[in-house]
Image (tube, rainbow, N blue to C red; front, side, top):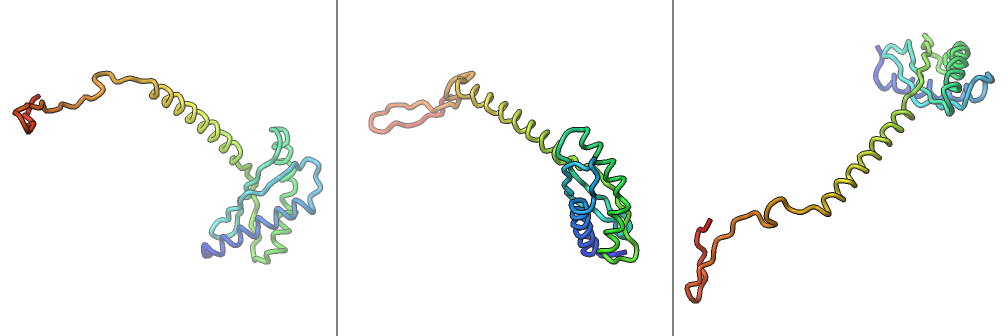
Length: 153
């Protein structure tokens, strides 16, 4: 097994190699505007999962996935040449869900802000259900000079 630091370095290196190769060598017209977001390598450095995003609609995502599948051999051989490891890792391309998750979180935050504003607006015009001051106050008895508090109640 390899150390976590080596695993991390290998993942970073694979990310750079795949991104550069996609930009410079792969001329597939199905390939859309691809961004390699992350790479995770198994502890034995035999398999690499490449996460990517595609700018565009579902059709662009599907055509890009097909282009990446067909270019997998070229990309893997380039990773092998540039890393010089004994066993070149197999590449698996996974569409990253970051944009969809971010959009979903933005929608949830917007709903929470609207609900918070509605509660704040309602609280601003609210009145107390009982007295404005619900606490008991001792009655003051006037004995002349000094008012003395008695335990009224």
